[in-house]
Image (cartoon, rainbow over all chains, first blue to last red):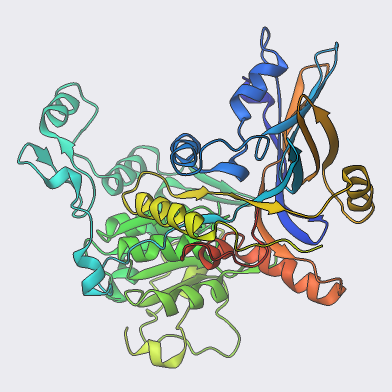
Length: 342
Length: 137
């Protein structure tokens, strides 16, 4: 519908006031491709996800099954003019009258609490887990326990055609360091890290993680923004044999808690405070709800007054000479009782 | 004016329970099922519109009579806005908190919204027919 280069997120999660309530609003702007009309844009964006649910198509099918015809509710009122301009207002918070009958229509969102799985999950709930589709037959290769597998026929083809090799991502970084050594690998603001420095920093990070007790196959939630620490942590986890569970910086407690519980994560790695949001507080809340989480690691300052975790690793040998100090060594433990889980 | 919110509540609860069961089968993650509430007293729609417009801050509002249908409403968001030059924008909303009228309390609620925009989904979504904190669409 739009040239991808023309798409701009103008506002992201800004609080807007609407009468007696307030919401988070985002605005995405684009430019119609040549040949496309306002109706194409409406066709793609209608019905509003705010009024249907996620994902849109199955949610709309469910609405038809359970509700029948909605009439104007959750539809749109349009103004269209001869210039091609169109304005579609989502219909909610309205009163309707037809054939002598007057009515209101409203509905809250329905979702289901995701089942808890993983090490700390309730056994009763865990027993209700859906079988992992990839493990039903013998003709499937499962690379990571608990994750979907690939059909063996595809695996053979990927290997034959060279899409899949034998190198791990952690190995690849070592190869790049050997080949490009002093070339800059990471640019983050004023700081620079060469391939060799990134390679050494990733090794040091892997050692720190192992010293914490993070073992092969352990899931670790990574909630870092795009800083120089992100690739160090990512490669460090991969070299430690852990499985990084990558999340988005905009994720908040609901998403992080779900992903941590679903993956049975043993650790969370996040920043301290970004744009006024304290990720350490989020981590403490998530740790309360997800029993498998044993370690909360902060890239930055631990919460004031909070003891450093007894399992906080000693400073790794200062082989990393990158201009960015290796700040991720500071780690905080959650409230005292939880530290005993470490 | 009062409306009877309990009208057809049983049928609605049944629909929501069925939809939540389907979510459990991973067919979708979230759905907004609505129900109608009959208004039995006479309503002056133009006056309702004028009153609502004076006391609300909608993105759009409308008062219409089209075919046999009349409606007045206060739209919180646009589905799409297309300008004559081909630029378009859409403004989806997420999360809902009340506005109390007290600036301090409202600021707290705004902070809560920023911290955990979808937290209210769980509060209002876990049981059938249990709307949460002002989350009605």
